[in-house]
Image (cartoon, rainbow, N blue to C red; front, side, top):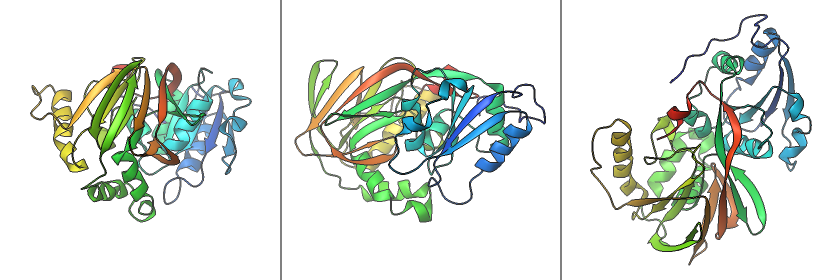
Length: 319
């Protein structure tokens, strides 16, 4: 943890009279939810909490009609739930807590949030928020939002293969599905980055806003969620395991351990608008949710679109 939080006490002046809207996905994660204890602590501290359960096939905006009358918004679920809620609440200036109730909870990990419900209530009580960018992805005329990354190719295939494993193995399902990607499909990708054309042969493209994977390990260096640009990662490696050396280099860079030891498996570029097409249609994912659409897609940066509650400083969110 980069910052410390103090759980709220009864009649805590930091929360007294605060109005908090909690939108939760009851289908996220495994096991019993810690959300009831979190809500109980907020109420005991003097906050007024409104809970709204997500229903299938309901637009996220339906839950946020009175958002501006609240002091804080809490999104409890997996990364897909949090990013969809952030996109629906964009530019409304109400701080959002990415409550980690899903399987991987990468957005919460990037924000260095604790897992303990008392500590999470303390994050809300402290009220420290960082303004960050969001991504908007458009596929065949339909728009959605993402907070962490959108991708086409091997990463989407990995998420597809993990779906049937998540209930039994939790976060290890992603590791197990990555091991299956030893011979992923390759194709030629055609990109347009802020109007500039680029083609390459590889196994996938990731358009990243946040830059940390599980355990806050950097996907690659120099990714910032608050610089008004995406980091576009071109996956050139023959399989997922060949990307491990690049992960090692990213950790070395984070720890200032010298120049990279490995190169060539991937390439990173920066852009505000990214259009991705491929010779062969590839599956898409954004923030861990696999979608039925395939390439082509367009991603646009939404600068400073959301304020996330976090104990971390803005600089701590960069890789």
